[in-house]
Image 1 (cartoon, rainbow, N blue to C red):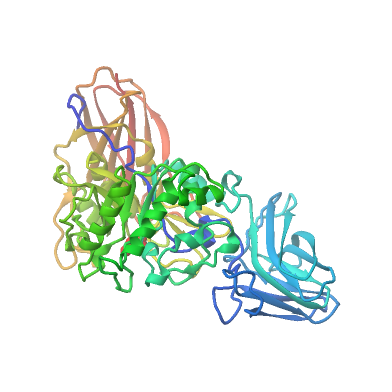
Image 2 (cartoon, rainbow, N blue to C red):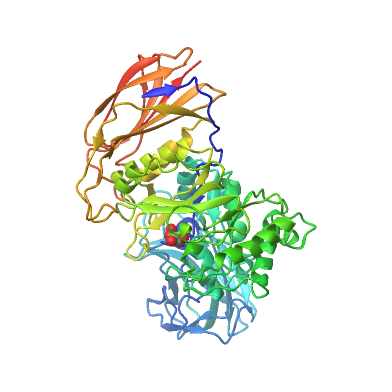
Length: 636
Ligand code: AHR
């Protein structure tokens, strides 16, 4: 490999690596969003209180059912009615959480709920976290209901030292007093990242922080669009107190609590120093309905303008003032707006006119914003249609492929015309292994990332999808995800670590690398990829890219050996002044490409760092089979 340090090169996009999320695979509810109570507002199923059971202990007797006769407010219309039939023992309600309630030692949980009793007399309740497999109560606190109407009650539950972490637990609210009780918005939070009220799980946020992402594309994906107009992402209903949020039906087969709403997305950005990349609903739904451009589309355009104002407006604007009322007076920085999602699926071809209407309205009010079109790129789906009436600033392209396809197409961006709109690879992944991807996927990802990085003057942003999966049975709707978790633990896939290596070891200038005599590899046709039915043509077995930090002088040379053979590579640092004799090598590898990390074995494949010596302007290194390596060299 010749690393051409003497050639002038382009800048690396400072936003090259970011995150994409949506409510899929229990990404927020049962995932990042730290709420532990499932179906807290009783709207998951209109026929029965799913995830809730009646508790009858030591002679207690009672029943539970959904009740629409005593709404808490116009948003939360269904409550859980508990009928306690006697004054003996203990009777109550229990919530099973998202595949359990995580119990950890010396941990403070915040429980809250709205309740009312049928009588004026004070009614003593106990709120507790209890084992589902034995008699243990991990934490408990008393609450006394008073008065007749709905009231909010809050208690703190503290676990003791010495208990073994477990998810075999449930939240229980019980009483030994006969009577009728109603409950709504029952909530339980463990400690959250940065101690935010209504915040996020710390372990998953730590994994994300490790990736140093530059932006967050939200709220989708399909989750933006919804199956129907009525189930598009309802950002206005996700604002303010949780008692104003009824939730909505998501497109991935379950209802979203909307506890992680528009402001929470923005605060998540703030916590990880990411810039929001806001996708606005553009009048097309997954089941195929679309709104023709013109007066019928205008309310959706207005809604997008209001949403942008909520994000960026100062407190003197209507929606900026709303944001301040919600607790965040400072506006958020916003550069990119995506208009819709995957509108190439809209076979009517209505996107061009819809894009035009959104574009004109947004540019008139916010000329500084960069607009992303979901069609016009070269990813197959996006190339079905064009936007010719206006020039989008950026095209969003999506790629879901096998490792072979990623490797075969790693030079995809090398010949894109720089005069065309910039590229945002808004969804991409090598889909091998599930629920989280395996090492072969990480190799495909890494090969693909060498191409994006080498062309990051033009490919200005990229984000993998989907980001999250709850690994419990029923938690996964989309195979092949980056980060997996259950109630207690979380882990990164080999693809996660590959991405972390690419995004954290990154300079500010692209350095041209040329390869000679790179061995090729061939594989048998694989029924899963585009080579099905034909003999795949040979592709390189080594992929590479280099960037340089012009402040520190560090060169990052990334080399992906996707083959089953070690490869000895002569490296010529052409044009380098002085090269420090010692550098750092970071390697992610496995002996078998199908090896992976799991919730049981979360760190089977992780990057390992070591110092290397004997470096000079020309040296050689052996790159191990199935490995992703980053060499950090100090160059003067
Ligand atoms: O990432 C999963 C889905 O793939 C997204 O919701 C959608 O945009 C794409 O088709």
